[in-house]
Length: 386
Image 1: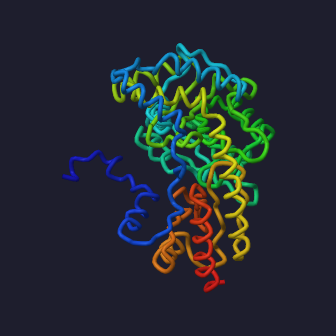
Image 2: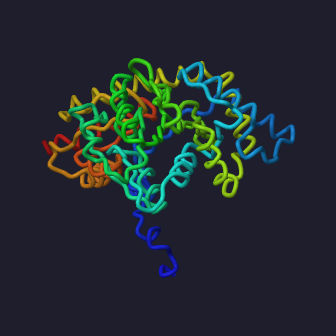
Image 3: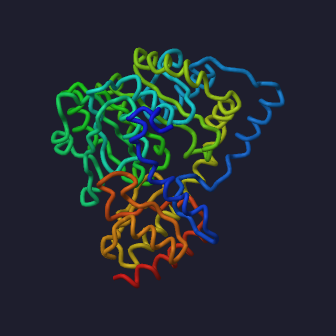
C-alpha cells in the first residue's frame, strides 16, 4: 500500500518526540521528563463552564471563525497584555489548538519553490508542516553562547530570494530562550527590508520569568506582516481542550478561514466556552502555575549544573536544554542509555533540529518530587561518564 502514498508524505520522518516515547510506553517505573504538558488540572471555574455548557445543550457548531464572544475577549486580552489590537470580526480565527493555526498559516502562504526560514532548534511541527506544502525549509542555527536568540546576521546568511515566511517561536520550545524587544527590532527591520511574512508562535508568552514578553506584532510596522499564533494549552493547563487562535491582517485571516472551513469547520463549542471563561476568571490560577514552574525551573538548572553539565538558563516556557557533550555521547545515545540504565525519559536535542545535537530537552512540568528523583538518577548516570 505504500505505493499509493504521496512521496512528500512517505518521506516524512516520524516525530522525534513520539518515536522515542513509543519505547517508554513499553517500560515500567520510568520517570518521564519528556512531554510538554502541564501537570496541573484545568482550573475548576474553567471546567465548570464547560460542564454547564453541556448541561445547557450547547452541542452545536459555532461560526467557522469561532464564538464572537470569545473573539471579542481575545481582542481585549491582546490589547491589554500585548499592546496589539485586532478586530474580532475579521482579524481573529479560533482554531483547534495552536497547532492547527501553524498548519493553516503554512498552507495559506507557502507554495512549491518558496522557502520557510526556521530558527533551529525548533518545535518539531514547523518543518514538516512547511514541507507538506511543497516548500523548502532553511534552518537557521542558534547557539547557547548567544542565548539561543536569533541574530539578524544569521538570518541574512540563510535568506534567499525565494524566502517568504519566517517562523519565530519565543519563548522557545525546546530551549526556553526568550527575545527582548531590543533583540527583535533588528529582526523586524530585516523582515521589512526583505518583504517577509512572520509566523510568530507565542504559545508560551505567559510563561516568561524575566522581564515582559514582547509580541512581534507590537513592533513598528510589524502588525500587518505578522500572523500571531497562541492558545490556551500551556498557560491555562488546557492541552486536551484543543483551543488556539491566530490573529493578523484580515486578508490573511480570510484565507486561513477558507481552509479551516473546509477541514476543521470550527473548534468544539464546549472548549470555546471554557476558553472564554479562562480569559475572564483564571488569571489568578495561571499566576500560581507560573510561580510553581519558576521554582521548578531553578531547581532543574541548579541540578544539571551541580552534576557538572553546562545548562543554559531558560527564561521562558517550561523546558531546560542542558549540554551533555561532556559525556562523550550523542543526544540520541544519551537519551537511550539513560532510559535503559536509570529509567528516566528525556528527548534527544536532535528531535528539534541539527543544532540540538549535544543537548537533551527536559520538561519541568512535573512535580518537584519527580524532578528531584529524576535529577538524582541522571547524576548517577552522568558521573559514570565524566
